[in-house]
Length: 500
Image (cartoon, rainbow, N blue to C red):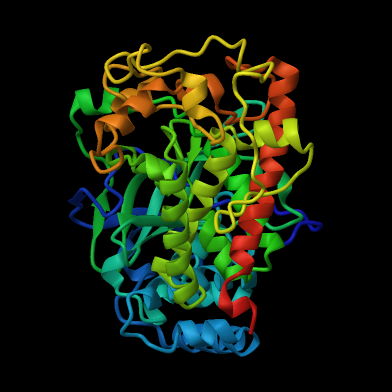
């Protein structure tokens, strides 16, 4: 992908989305001895053609910081912190775990902004110092410079790897290209290996629509080279290959990224939020959905747990507001809260009755509990006629009328009940913890609810469910998307660092 003169020089790959696979150990599966590979280099006295020679890859990412790279990255960080006071505050205390993530993502943003991507098929690899002098480089040149700059900025070499392999780029129409690639993975303060790739800017929407799937062959740093491939349990691999996520991370990524931009979050924070999304078997997923094996309906407004879910969202936002802007724990909680807010509008009946009763776009206020809606399911033309199932082991129809029980309150669909799964990922998801539904009455109410797939509006396009025809579904999606966008934007804007 050659950089166009009209495009900002943000890099060869433009959105941080790692292809997640149990077949790869991103930290390195086994050490390769000797740590050598054929690398093209320009040899003195041999003309202008690069020649492949055996080289020790560890030399490209020295464990001891290069004085040249150290001087450059120190100056660049000083310039950025001088312009952005919140960064200076976030980097003030190196003893805090969040310092490492803030520094790593800042260094990545600096390298991708200052070093122009130039596709150079078959060209010689450059030393990091040469890439600095040229202010441009191919993917491996920028990757080795980034790894060296991370070490020079104070990140432990143990937590830094340059990956060599391939990336498959898939466009919105499904056309794919597989290309040789080099990139950096960094082990965050939460212990998660994260790809550090450029994130799309406003003028790079063509690149932003690409789906990326990484296939590492080797990873290396200044100490070792490792093979990235491991043998995995075939049954485990089959289970992951069957997953068909229904939470639609593409929508969450779009909402959260736009909200972060509208809220005026600093660029460095916005790129870190974008990198929190990943690709799993062709679907963009964010952290709450990756934790499906530790599923809690209160993170997703599932199974009618509306008030409990709002308390969870407000608790997580409280942590975000108390932490410094850019703090790793604060950002994780902000992403979980944003996911939950989006799920409230996508999963619950609030938007349905909002449009019926008020015909307006008014985000819900969980503190004042306004606007107060009637939620009259029995007289609603769509709910009253829809074929809505219930969960027999928990709900006995003779106990109470479903519409009477739901009257006056927002509901959402039941999800992940034993032997009640509608797709593969729901099958793999744990049942709700006992604390979510602690009494027989709570289970009875949850069992009376329709299934998630019957009433939720999770994705754009010509979809239908038990309530809506395709045109109504599309209109509901647009309404719910804009409600979530406004609500999440306001939640981000409430951070004290943006109001000082």
